[in-house]
Image 1: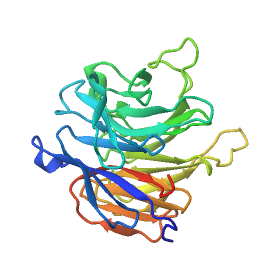
Image 2 (image 1 turned 90 degrees about the vertical axis):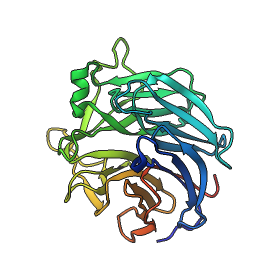
Image 3 (image 1 turned 60 degrees about the vertical axis):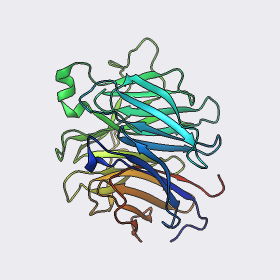
Image 4 (image 1 turned 45 degrees about the horizontal axis):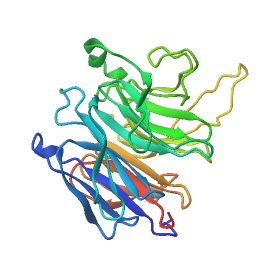
Length: 316
């Protein structure tokens, strides 16, 4: 079913085909694909994750950096949501290696925060909306040898703000079928460190190559893209987190493939009200479908090399 209100999509074109001289863009269109516009152009440092803050009129995005082999040249920027103006770097280079998916958590009782995964930095991180108070919440490795092990690479992230729980993906090698999704409280246990916390839970393992995540917190359903090999890869998937426990109290999760045949699936956003999801692939496709995977539509077939995507309701 089509959206009953016309929200707006914001998505990234990384322009990776022009590497190392790429000029990435932030594009915007209506939820049905109409009214395509360029919001920001000339992004040189590989934009990957994007999230909107309509309450404050901002759009945030991560930049992976000028070179993925150059440590700590990633950054996070923001602009005005209305017109792409007033670009500001809130987390400068020198702190992040390769920031990937970005999300915003606004708990009912608590301060709002940005959360992201730092791929080659092997970290899950957060900060205030103005870039202050950067924190490392999870550290999966620290050495060059750790970095060579792609199972340590953190990529996608989503947060259940009121439950105080975050979910993230560690993608593993390309098409390697060793991707995993984890979860943990957003607060470190007292006296523990990000590299040795004991409250991390494996949600799913053995995935082809999980990338971006999105949680429907009200329904307790986790969605994600996977850019691994078919038949389980290049898909959008979901998992009911309220799955029944067995006689021993252990949960056995089983994912559901919603749609297939993406071309390096990356970005993911949901319109929970109208039961629609939006997703992108690296070959430039922007798509919509019902939350059960039906009624898949191609909104744009080739608008560059697409990474992250965000959705803003019309009433926001």
